[in-house]
Length: 134
Image (cartoon, rainbow, N blue to C red; front, top):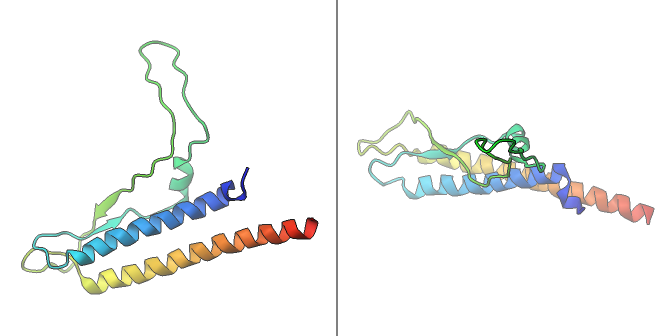
């Protein structure tokens, strides 16, 4: 088992991937700031509970009768976006507020850097522990 397969590292990696996806959605909002009728979007808020629920843990169901539906829990990389109501809508119907989007991008970048720092520090701690015992 690799160190990066530990649950804490998987959760941090999942969080970093969420931030990358959100960055793309926010950039798309900014790119369409002049498009008539465009509604700004955002990615569904990330929670570690959702990450735990998405993990498969190798759980599957057994089919005991022919009419039963088989299923399994598997990790899904699809991200849900949702439209956010904005208090400001231009006459063309566009709901992108550039100031709001830039604040979201800055917060997203800071959160991504925090997750990256935690990931790096965790790997450093494991390396330090292994080098002292060797």
